[in-house]
Amino acid sequence: NGGEAACLSVVESVCRLLPGFMGHEDSGEEESFSQGLLEYPHYTRPENFAGRIVPRVLTAGNHARIAKWRREESLRLTLRQRPELLDAAPLNAEDMDYLRRLPQLSLGRNLHLALVHYPVLDKDKNSLAVSLTNLDIHDIARSSCCYGLGGYYVVTPLQDQQRLLAELLEHWTAGAGSRSNPDRAEALRLVSAAHSVDEVLRQVETRCGERPLVLGSSARPEGALAYKTVREALAERPVLLLLGTGHGLAPAVLEKCDGVLRPLRSAFAYNHFSVRSAAAVMLDRILGDWH
Image 1: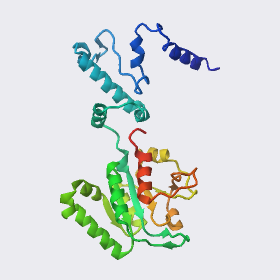
Image 2: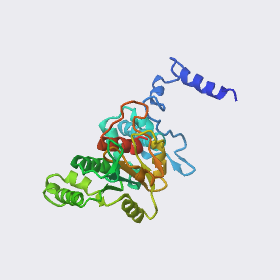
Image 3: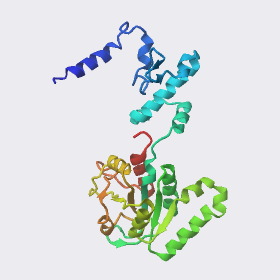
Image 4: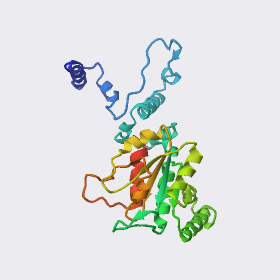
C-alpha cells in the first residue's frame, strides 16, 4: 500500500493531543506509551462474557485498589510484551518490588563462562600461560551470580595456580570468609577449576546433556557475532562464553569456537577493558533486565 494505514495511525495519535478531541482529557494520560508503559486491560459489560470474568477488584468500588491493580497490570503486560520499554519508564520502588515478584524467564542458567589463563597471548602475540588474578576471580563470580549463570570456570593447567584457586575458594565458601561475607560465598560457589577449555566443554556437556555453543571474545576486529544472537541462542541450548586473560585468547582456543563476539567498543579507537569489566558489560548486553 502507499502508507495510508500508517498515516491514519499518525492522524489519530496526533489528534488525541488536541484539546477537546477526547471526551475526557485525562484519558490520554493512561494510554499505552503515555507513561512509558503499555496500558492496563479494559473490561465492559456483561461482567461474565464467555467465561471471562471481570476481576473482582474492579467492581468492588475501592479506587485505591483499582489504581494499584491498573499499575501492576501495566507493568506485567509491559514486561511480557515490550520489556525494553521498562528501561526508560519512570519506575518507583513499589514498581520495582512488583516486577521482582513476577515470574521471568531465566536465560542465565543456560550461559556458562570460562576465564582462560592458557593458552592466551602476550603483547608480542606469543602463546603462554598467565597467573590467576584475585580480583578477576571474585568480580566475575559476583557478576555471574547476579545474572544467574549456570557456571563459571577458571582454566589453568599450572598446578601451583590450581592450588592457589583451591585455597581461595576454600576460604570464601567453607572457611572464615563464608561466615564474614555470605554474599561473597554464594558467588564463589559458582566457580569451578578446569585444566583446559576441553575439560570445561566436557563438564558443561555432562551437566546440560548436550554440547554447548562455544563463543569466543576478543578486542580485536575478528569478532562479528551480535549479543542479541547469543540471547536468542540461550533460549534453545547451552552456551559457553570464553574470556581471555593476558592479551586475549590464543588462536588455538578461537579455533574451538563456533563464533566470536563483536568487540565491546568496535567503532572506537580505545577498546582496552579489563577482563572483569568486559565480563560485566557482556553479561548485561546478553542478559540485561529489559531486553
